Image (tube, rainbow, N blue to C red; front, side, top):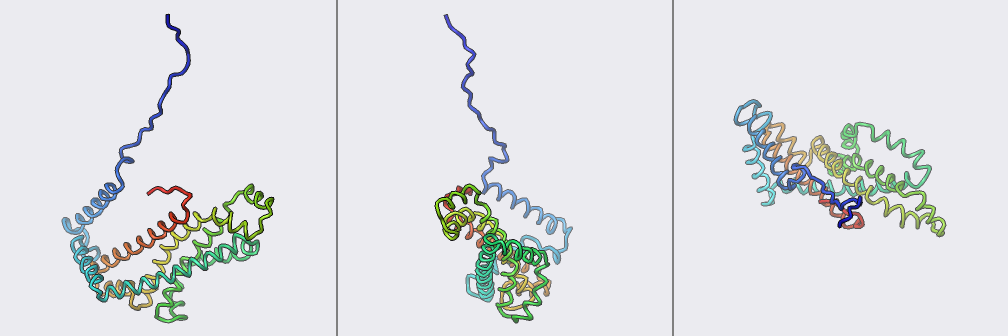
Length: 277
């Protein structure tokens, strides 16, 4: 004789992942690149819908790209231009990170910073910052200083906001625990607020990499000099659009490398958070 009970049977929940979400990243990126290049080739080479003066074909761009890369590896003038842009970006990012962090501390840690300084920072950030390029050139000349200043000027604000936001991320219970343990303001900042705020700060630094690149290239484009931005202007004035596209691709790889460097540094310093690749 068997006794049947109403006890629920063991069930295993299986989440069905959509097919598009199961595609490996490398395959998805490759497929997207093929679609973009295929469309590009279709409208330029196959059908001629777009003039090569406006949009060069992938073949022309690839030929110029290999020339530029070869010149860089041979230590030619493109290497000198890349080295100049690299130094400019480095100093601009360093200044933006340092000044942005200090201003973020002022805004996030003091009522004066939050009430008096932050409104001015927001007003400055709302301005079209690229329009300041002629002023920086007039004040600092056509050398590297004006490009560094413009890049740092554009990239500072995201670091300020991210740092202040990170300092606010600690909960009231956490701050109360530190107060009841007799922690000083500096100890609370160093041992609670900054560790909690590091993910926010790195988010600001990653946004700043984009701003630095935009500011430096704009400065070189408008103010001349020896960087890649000046070479883009020179190629554009000669209607050499394949060379312009090739230089833009080189700058894209350079900017991506800087971004990935910050991501790697974040994984090393903020090791208690698990990141997805």
